Length: 122
Image (cartoon, rainbow, N blue to C red; front, side, top):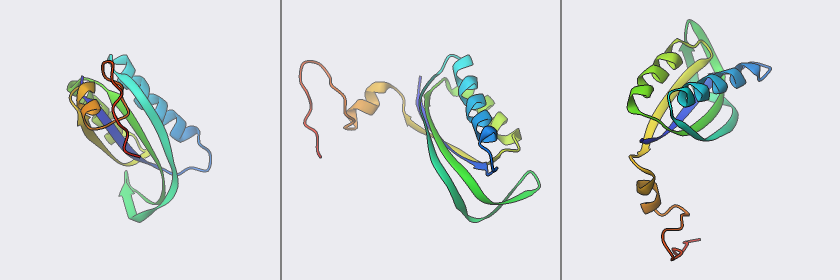
């Protein structure tokens, strides 16, 4: 399964139950389709670089979050459909990080392969 990263900007609400529901819905969709959610990170609430319009509303602030996951490419179509229809989502993008976990290890990630430990460039 390919490895992806999704960056999402959610509409800002005073309480975090809305963003929590959006993150939960996205992660459960991936896992129900047989994928693996590796990491979810909140990037915080920020002012948007410009006023954005989505679902008839204008947004000036957004909650940024990322999710790293492995899933089949077919699942991305349904995930994009969910994100497109959800009124809590302002913008999102999905990046393909690699086709296999071995691709990620070759790029110098902190991974032990075999009996040797690769040198870390710190």
